[in-house]
Image 1 (cartoon, one colour):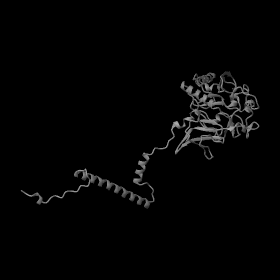
Image 2 (image 1 turned 135 degrees about the vertical axis):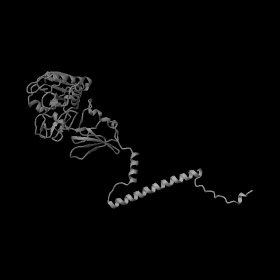
Image 3 (image 1 turned 180 degrees about the horizontal axis):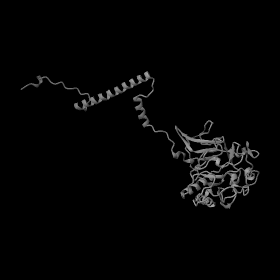
Image 4 (image 1 turned 90 degrees about the vertical axis):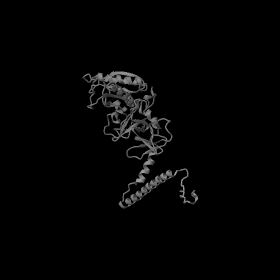
Amino acid sequence: MTDTALLPQARKRRRRFSGLSEHQERRFTWIAGVIVLAVMSGWTLSIVDIYDQKQTGTTSPSVARTVASSLLNQTKPLPFISDAAIEFLDPIRGESGKLRAAFVTPGTPMGSRNANPKLVARYETEGEAPYVSRDLRAPREPGIYRMAFEIDRARRAIEDLNVITLVPFGEKKSGKIGLYYLGSWPYEQGGKPRLPTYANPRGFIEVTRENQSTNVSEHFRISQFLTKDQRDVWPKYLLLEPKLLDKLELTISNLQAAGYTVEHVHVMSGFRTPRYNHGGGNTSGRANLSRHMYGDGADVYVDNNKDGQADDLNRDGRSDVKDAELFASMAEKAEREHPALVGGIGIYVACCGHGPFTHLDVRGYRARWRGTSGG
């Protein structure tokens, strides 16, 4: 019997990782070696890359830096101001949702008190330093401003809404502001108006050659409502009631929904200064309390090709009072569906150098009539 104690014994391998078999340990060591080799290769490439950049003067990011940046950016959400954060502006857009301007007195808070208290408003106008407001108040200087909101590092520009701060009514002296003549309003010297809509205006839009093309709603610009006198006097001063724009836009929407093409509405007469209303042009039929003097009345007709003539809106082969009646019927529908826009609707036949047209206003009570000259 052979004594095994006298035979040479195989040396027992020392285990490096307890809990692993010899085969598992070899496999783990091999994988670890591959990883170390890859890391060393990456660092080597980075060093070579840095050296090449120094030699060539280029500043392109290294492979390692690019990968790291990509990974970090994927885990870091971009700052964003949601629609919900600015929904307090919705009432400014009117019942039609198509108003593109807010008419406010200087320093007036924008929107409701439900706005996020962290929001900061930023107002910008041509040639002026931005006006920043932490309580969302409108700029204190009259003008037309683009608006953006900021919160923390997020910023959102409001591309389809202008803020128009008004020149206070008290700036009018001796019937004019600067060189622009306005005249006097019916109750300016005393007396009590029967409705608030007949009180003195709160302020005027200052209109310059540069800003006259500003959109105030989807289909209308400031210049369309200017009084048609003092052509070479700038700046001009204008009254324009947002409810009038809302009623016009709703009437257009009603026409389009009924299958009629409306791309452009011509404003034959918009705002009239008291001076012009009483003494300029053809004044026959102009009331002493004309809604045109308050900026909430307009004489209009559809003129898609912009040739200065009323279109055949109802497609019966001729342009006549029936087209004005059709426009009026859609304004009636707008009033029924939106009682806050109640006012006057007048239908006018072709006469005295003009074609048929429709008068709309938002005086605050229902009025209907037919006529031949301007309302």
